[in-house]
Amino acid sequence: MDVKKKPLKETNPYLKDPELCEALFHQSVSSSTAVEGVLTKYPKLSKSLEKKLKTVCVRESGVSYE
Image 1 (tube, one colour):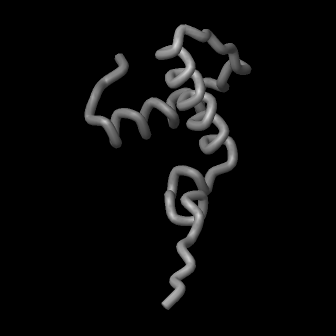
Image 2 (cartoon, rainbow, N blue to C red):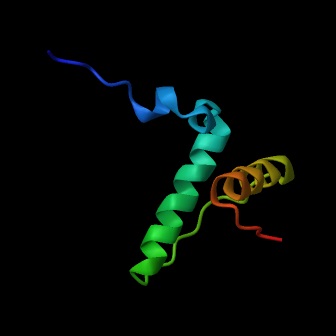
């Protein structure tokens, strides 16, 4: 029986918002490359998107970034 799995982008509610998806992608790449000693720069986030990203991070990790 071949069960086709849905892509993460279709099942993760945070990735359905294109702006938030891009911000999460940049955060993930940035933190992963920093571990390897490579620093990356991405465009500055709007205040509302920055707030949304922090809310998601806190909700999912339980860690406050304030």
